[in-house]
Image (tube, rainbow, N blue to C red; front, side):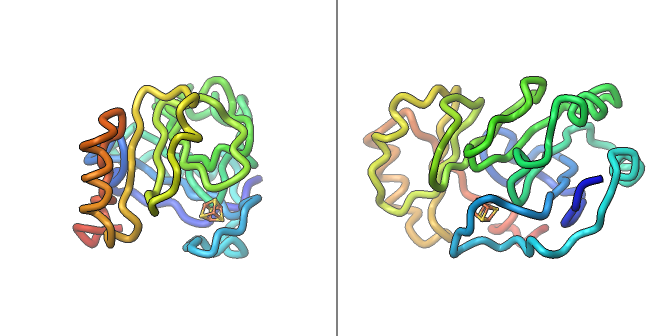
Amino acid sequence: MKRINEIFYSIQGEGFFTGTAAVFVRFSGCNLNCDFCDTQHEEGEMMSKEDILAVIEPYPSKHLIFTGGEPGLFLDADFVRFFKNAGYFIQIETNGTRPVPQNIDWITCSPKENLLLNKANELKVVYTGQDLSVFENFNASYRYLQPCSMKNTKEVIRYIQSNTQWRLSVQLHKLLDIN
Ligand code: SF4
């Protein structure tokens, strides 16, 4: 049983799969304590993987995104395999402080502090003017920079124009005011 904060059906608003219909399963609980965190980690319902599948099965998309909280605290290969056997493409959105199961299809790493992972399919960083050279040796197929609450979009664009290994990610769901 896992404590699930919420399950919802929407479109991915960030990174490589922006615009893709997806089911989001949000775990409660994180090993970090960021000031800007918007997850209520104490809230949630204890659910088995069968409970979760029963909720998500009616949705047409087979793109399943485990997010949090920090899903790396709760996922193991058996749990992931259960949903893969049900036909899902599995994406994880992780802060990169925990190992993630090998059988995940797509790893999105959004580092905050204490980064453990050194590779992911995509790296997604909220830009506040920090030194990004710390990610030079991070192995990622795609590198996304996000404005901080859409307040420094021009600064982010200028940075990307000079550092072309990065791409812009704009939190489409917030721009469109959708869940
Ligand atoms: S890593 Fe993410 S989920 Fe964890 S405290 Fe920070 S913002 Fe919240």
